[in-house]
Image 1: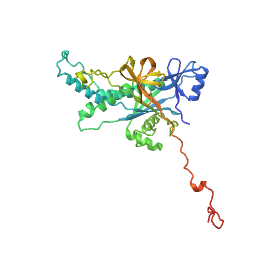
Image 2: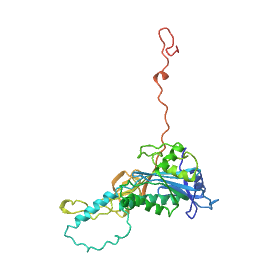
Image 3: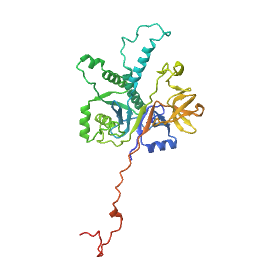
Length: 370
């Protein structure tokens, strides 16, 4: 049965080579290690000195995408982790609403500060949507470096559609500017190797692997296949992964604090809206409730908070009291393990295979071979 390897770190928090779940359980039971959770992933921290600090080369393959992204952590011996993450989206639309409301407030007769020169005019600045999208990738890469001894990153290079204008393609394309910023920040963690799309395709065909066309499917063949192929091209190893279990991750998306709602309510008053605090508790905090069990903190209304399922983000209730919520840990994203696909079942037997053979008038069996 396929299983996800358990990250291992020494007593100082330095990542070591991962281990099998059975061995990690024995270490915890004997007191040689202590279990911990980091970023929704389970790991063990050794309480004794390890036999060796030598680690094998581990590569992290990254397949960027507009909707879903693939991450694969592997060495020449094993595939340790496969992650399919939801891409960060919605920032561009939120910035448009913020700009529209700011320009609307300029027409009101309200006190405002004196205009001042733009201090960021001459500085290089990423658009908010571009920065949020690539920062999410960098956060996941940083998490993997904290859990595994990563030696190299292999990224499938993406390019913006050209418009026939040299200055746009090289300087003003948000995609090009964002990926170069990402490569520079990623290089601070480990060396970066890029692969073109046609190179990845050639490697897939060489290994006999087939990619599915369903981009939103939660299967290894959707996005992790390109990440895995790119990593194998650097560290080498098997021609097929020994672990295709998938971990799905999704960032929390909050309604950032606004001065007020877009439209006034009765009486011409505008209520405050958004923020990251609900009755003094940070939104996204994992809490324990006596009725709903483990849940995450959502919004607030009428002095009460809403609770959500930690894996699916489905709202459980809107009337939870803060006093009944026992904080456990602040989460930054949702993590869930995709269950294994059920084994194929044999087709149901036909009626003639189950019922006893009928006899004809002459006493010969109807199932007799003629």
